[in-house]
Image (cartoon, rainbow, N blue to C red):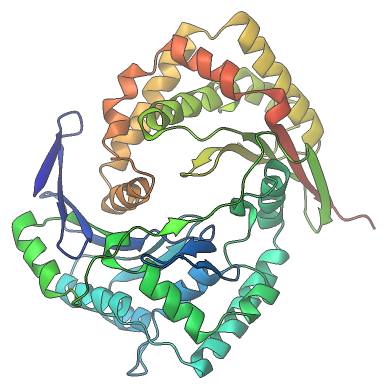
Length: 426
């Protein structure tokens, strides 16, 4: 078992790759009564074309299969739903699907062993029938229709359609009503057997655990399955330039919503953590609550809420998203571009950089105090090829000079887009 120490946050990570290929990560925390377990597979909405290990024929599946699988795994052959079982144990359980992975989790104070039994049981023992699949289609179609009518979802999805020509990240995670209608039992079992192999999965535990003991407990709960070879994912070629700069739609909203996006090039694992930190700092310098731009726009009534500032990335996409509400989104967009050019010409104030850097570093430290945040972070980063401790280790490498380089390299006007959802006309 490998032990990774991080002295800055005084945390230890125990990592072991089991014989069946499952990567287990354990973060012991003696001073907490909460325990958290999350198991995930590197199978998300973007993985619609692939080669099964040992086969040469390309498999094409409908949009939304990863999300559909997530829904169906809870239903067991004995007629029970595992979410109901976990809820009856008094634990908080959930699951989610992203662009690049699917995860199943629970948090508890008591009944960990019983809840862990249930988690490992339903994730490793799928039960699909023609009848329960057809029933689920109706549930998911309702979910799709709900999100189709949701302005926040639409303004975000439209921003991805502006940024990307072919990248499957622009596909809705749930798929469409048409694509969901094509899903059947054979597709689900084929995708489960391919992507839910332990060698494509990881389990993270955080809480008051003895790593050596819990590893044995995990082994006792594993279904007998051999590790498989690498799944070859096939993605369409993506152009460097954006598809179009602007998209505007009308929906029932009290005030217009906007997303300002910036398309970025995918970076290597060695560079991405440092770059991610730099972009977070830059976004708060340019448009954070303490920035001159935010104060100006808010005081003038041009910004209604504090915008969300995000850098989203995986192995085959990377982009910045700034999401907010404004009576005049285009004015916000123009002022954002002007502010970037000002910082490029005049440089960034050192004291402002140091203040924002301390704030971001504080956010990172706080995340290690929460068993749920730290577990989800380690799982998500694992599927990106990152050890989450790297954010703490590399923070001091992000200098003022480096973020000014990133400003010029990433915050480029011809890579920017805006998506707007405005009020419906009477």
